[in-house]
Each structure stands twice: as C-alpha cells, then as structure tokens.
Amino acid sequence: MKDYEHIVIWLDYFNKTLPRSKGRKLEKEKCIFDPSLKELSDAAQSAGFEITETDDKVRFPRRPFVRSGYIVLPKGSSKTKILNKISEKLVLKRSKQSK
Image (spheres, rainbow, N blue to C red):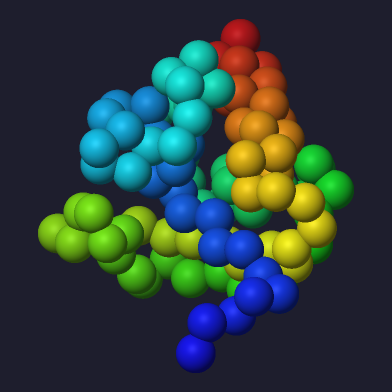
C-alpha cells in the first residue's frame, strides 16, 4: 500500500552518468558520478532531513539489471525542493573530497 507520509529518494536521481530517461532527476551540474548510499544518507542528514529507512539491495525500476539503493524521508516539502537541498550537499562534499 502506498505511503503518503514519506518520500523515497533513489541513488539514481543523482547519478551524473545516467540520462534523464534512465532516472536522473536533476541537471548534470547538480549531480555527481556514481553516488554511494552512504554519501546520499550523509548529505540528507547534513541538509537537515531525518532518514527513516535505507536499503542498498534493491534495483531501480528503470535499471533492473543494476543494484541501486534508496533512502526514505518524511514528507515535509515538495520532492523537487528536497532533491535540490540534498544535491547541494552531495556536490559540495564531493568537491571537498577531490581537492
């Protein structure tokens, strides 16, 4: 049964190597190469969200041949705003690591 109180955020939303037709939700400037579930959960927590559930053994529906992962957040605002906040933290963290 569908849960209207939470939002599912997939790793593939932030994968810079994927085209939008395969699941990327944001512009390439707001995405990173091959994000990990730990990076995603750290970015969500630093953006101020409380993670209620994670799973790394699932497959994104548009790419059923590749394992992916997701986190579940309580619904607070629109999904686009949540994705933008998380992507800011992801890109910032990844740019600090590369320096």
